[in-house]
Image (cartoon, rainbow, N blue to C red; front, side, top):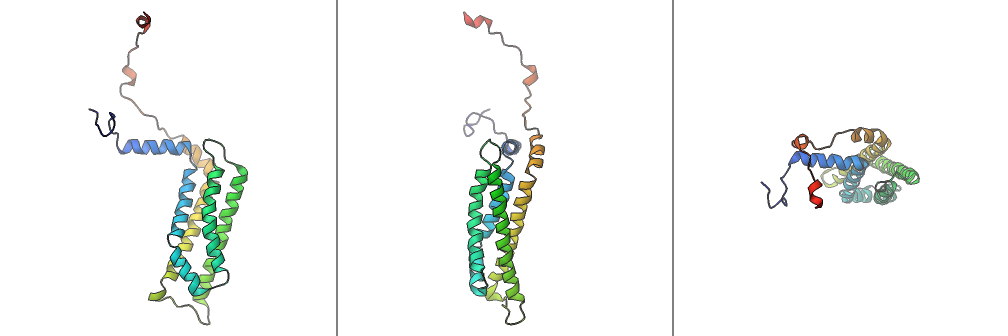
Length: 193
């Protein structure tokens, strides 16, 4: 019996949700690296206060520029990613190269920032001591490391996109209908009169 909430259709449940997700993924498998890029951006941007406090406390060479460049290129990489994979068209190779360069630059500025933190904490003369009042330094180190990891995951997923997109397309997402084989032929020859 049809339900008013579903608009006359029977609710299909979790299996139907998974099937629809797989159909969407078959049409645009580039969503997988996009989700990794979104995760990298969210990890970095939601912990920006810890990174800013670490930059102010350590005040190492180019830390502020690295922080700014990481945030800027994280945002710009979304724009380039969406331009790289236009809807229902082949990937734009020029934009793909630009995206790879942006991801490489993000890895570079994150590595420089991480080296500044490590050198400030481990230097022999007047090292920065991480105590209860400066736990944000450890948070910033973890966040930048996670950002590097997710940028690397995004790059690997982009490189392997042709391989796993073929595998995803082979997944059977068709619906098996019980009454499909028992339908009788409908005679419409009398309806023209």
